[in-house]
Length: 624
Image (cartoon, rainbow, N blue to C red; front, side, top):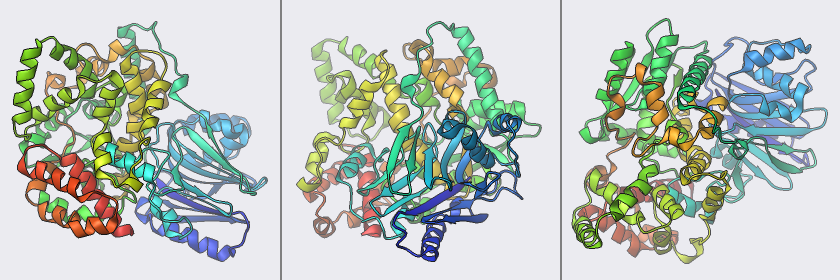
């Protein structure tokens, strides 16, 4: 696991020593991603570098790594899980290897197959490969977007790197807020690829690679997409369960290969519980498991995690997070995020990563199960909407009047209000409502001053929703989740939180085979009535505690609503005071006052919207 950076000076106007120093400085800004070694490479106007976190082939795995003639050089962030199989095939073709790393497989696979090598590798990665013969640079991002990769291009330079701060730190890209990205952030609470918070700096899309010639021609190409996966209507439910068990065992076995200590995150969910159960079957010694808890019982799932740990006899570690600890690290954590990111579960993700890093270097997670097997409660909105409309209109009217008058302080009240907000809308609008954890369209119009409001900023979601293969609305929503939510939110959160702690995380459920298999399954194998994630529950019921899947799960949530009304209230009021907001010229202070008043009074729970503003203000004060 590493971080990569690079600079291509097309005109070769900058001295080589200065280019070298710039890329070195880019590396220094992400040293936590790779504290063990720095690697650099330079040829002509091309300079690339990396920071290495040593996980495999500890003695000989430093980068860059070359082919036999040193005409190809690569720096790489991630893991190629099928590298041993690929290496065997390449050796049969006559390729000679000098290390035991997965990185070296990349240069030889490129030599053998060209850009087609990307179709052959299975892993998480951001790749930077230079061909000295042609002067062409290739950068590539993995299929699902587990590893981040940013770039900036103009007529003089091409910059790329694992984190935005490295690019901005060179002083080459202008620091101007992207209006479209700002609108997406305020509504979704994150910024999905290809945008970043800055104009003209972008993220490489998952499943894409880019080629850059020495003349400065930049081209982006898609090498993989869920659109090309057909539905498997012929497989029986029983056979599908068996195949899922086989694939996940295989994926976990591949991801347990490591030359350093390895463990697992264990929440109260089915996915992490299944991963831990299978790891325990495959491991010769007790698996190290790590759980985050809260003093607030509504958010604490340690008891569920203990059930799984006890069943599998893991070496279990628990960490309790309270506000005082969170506050001590909050500015440091947000300060490393580069762009606004307001998924509050970043906090527990960071702290459990920091805790785990004291004991292991590699962690397996249960991430992506909800996206792959329809585990989110939002997939039930049509079910609840239909049920609600079954009642006579006069009963619904009385009920709505009561719900909207109640204080918005309980989880049940919030869930009911979500349903009420969605029942009268078409299916896509319902989905957009539930995806939008921040300020919805009409709210954004009130929040943002005219120059910053972008009416069409969310149109890409409708386009992506319609891009899915014909099927049920579940399939379309899943397509949206796998392409947008997973990359922009869930995977970004885990990558940033873990890498800040120099901890490598691996996601067995995101093997190529599992992703393609899960997406191809009939929807009724994944959801049936109110039964979410049906096939995961049935396929792995024998390795989970009895009755475990029927118990409610709260998710990796944080008690922000209470913190905002109490400990964090003074800082919020300071960050959102009238003078500060007026000087910025971005937001309408009267609407902000209304949002704060609704939350502090308990009338409407506005924790997500306030957190989005809080995080943005922290970022803005630091960057401008």
